[in-house]
Image (cartoon, rainbow, N blue to C red; front, top):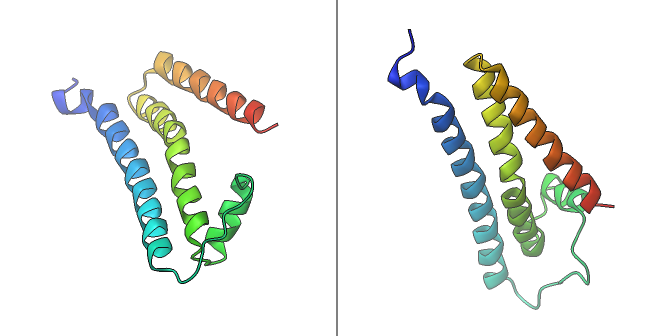
Length: 120
């Protein structure tokens, strides 16, 4: 028998996924802005937006470049819908709701196709 709490588990998981994405994004952007504010000299602004691989490399190398931190925050914010859809698919799979698992995976495939198309 399904309880009221179990009916809303997917909504809670999605809410947490959205909060995590937004908070990580805001934290990275705030850290980047703070470092930019206190940095000596002028900032090195790229002539073009950096590739996601460059942003990831900068983060993993331990560099505290303010501009790259702000771009990382924007990247996290843009990837939050992907996290939301994956969380929904997992939640629906836990609830054994095959129809919504398929719908969530189709939406995820559409998001991935849009991302691949836009990065060309």
